Image 1 (cartoon, rainbow, N blue to C red):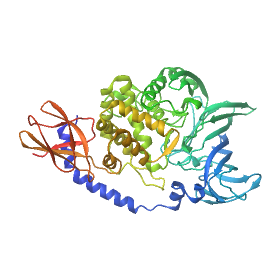
Image 2 (cartoon, helix red, strand yellow):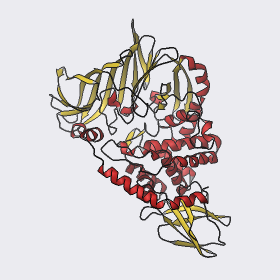
Image 3 (tube, rainbow, N blue to C red):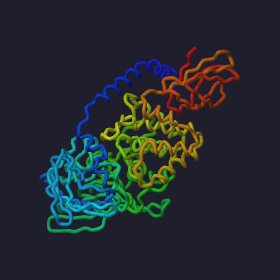
Image 4 (cartoon, rainbow, N blue to C red):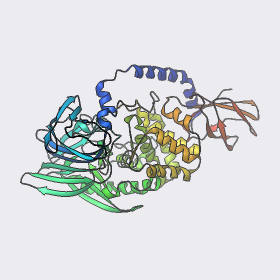
Length: 551
């Protein structure tokens, strides 16, 4: 539970937090955004008239020169009349040509955006294709996966070890695409050619291997919709092992690709993957991509949630690089990267934001999944201790939700504060089976869809039967922590209200007073109840709120 000294510090910091919040928003409002931000972050007219259906991305990787050369066949459905298409590819890569039905098309480049003029009349309801040729040296990742790009390195045996990671910076950092999350391609064939002695592992299932004198070409096919940043290449001297998981939708192939020297320890350490699958199918419903299988792939950076090809680089340690992010020791019961990044298969890959401003949908639910993993295997209090422990990492400087239409995500608080928001919601609903049905229902109702914050909020409100608008506004769009203020007007009358919160904030909260537990419905206006005896009010510690006795 919250210690009173901490609660008092919350209250004493209210004026500072309020000032910081106003200052941050004033600065954000004056931030100069560029045309490139709009072209990247919005549904431009040149994006809005066509719907992605299929990609065939074919690329050859040249490790010695850190360069790529390839093609992308784009099949799309025409949804309205237009003759100019936007395709994105970031410098220093270059599109060398675009063709449709054998005819060369003209295009103009505006930063990463390429505006292609189509000669054939685009008729709504028809399916069309264009072929894009490109080449060059893609941006090299300096601090992957946070800055994004291609990582070029070597393993301990001196063999090339290469991987892509591009959340945030975008898929167009290494291949030409419709680089906006609102439109997911229905399926994709990924063909990658690498030097002999290496292997590429991408998303989905392996289809074909072609060995030539000096190269190896491999096809990977994804049969489910996939967000563009989830498409990846991973190249190394890999060895493979796997297992079968009997899950809610039948037999799931779980495959693991690791560097040759790490095979034996991976066979022991990757047992967390099966434990993850058991826990998350319980909480979230069936793994969303049985048709494409599940993979863990070792990479030369920390890891990421690439769909059906989750990447791993936590050095075979428990926790996050051997540390517990919650400070409770519970975080050392599992490998953070395996649990967190695989949790994104449900929240990020199955349910994907339409705009990066709503990235909390990915990260808040997946942060919360860590505590649910613990609860499934070690009991509810283990999970609750873990999620409470992460509060020390919350900054409360800027809101969790970002700026729409500009490829601008919100605060990093979407992780720990977002997880505590969801845990608070669970307490408010006060029915663990209903809460579990909501988590599973989200993955069923929004199966393989892109969504908005409003859709997620509306679903949770509808299923809970509660008006949660002010609660969502408080934690997603504000930076202050609600504080329950209380005092006794006489020995048996408890007066209370919420302060430090949005106008009209009302939320029930469970308290203990005089050894008796009760639920009070608190508002921003003073309310009161009669109690048998006065004393200190102790809040249910699983609510992310403060508490302060006025007198």
